[in-house]
Image 1 (tube, rainbow, N blue to C red):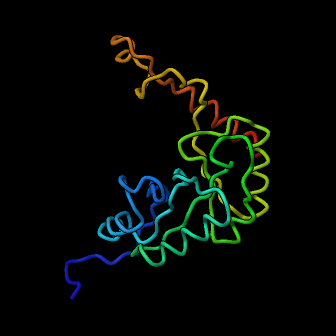
Image 2 (image 1 turned 90 degrees about the horizontal axis):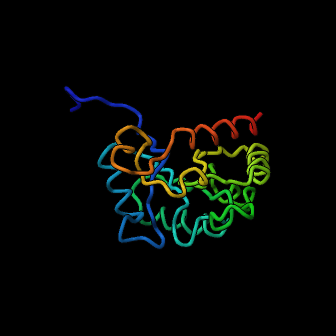
Length: 178
């Protein structure tokens, strides 16, 4: 009896950190999936910031097989843009797509090499793969504390992160996407 209740489609969480493999003390496929199901989330998009990084077709395949066994909700694994999330060598985007990956991201950082990122965007477009960008110029946040640059941060002598760190990469990525 659903009297007084609401029925709606399941929620898709486009950015989760399951941290499995490598950081299971933080989250696992099973615990993340149980928490999602409890909250009405039916699909998780798991970021590639694991150890090892989710950056190859084999890793996507292995994680998808494990998720089918261990996780009560659907998991879509996000592949890294570059090998090891090091910003140097493009991953096999087409190969990861064949294994079921729908998105790429460097999660938590930007690919600072604009030429390489442009190639990643072009490859992703050709493969019908979504690019999830984390817009943050790493050179502008290198010595900052995780606090916005403001009168508050300045009054306490904290090197805060300026909004321009995000704006610069967002503008770059928009131009590259054109």
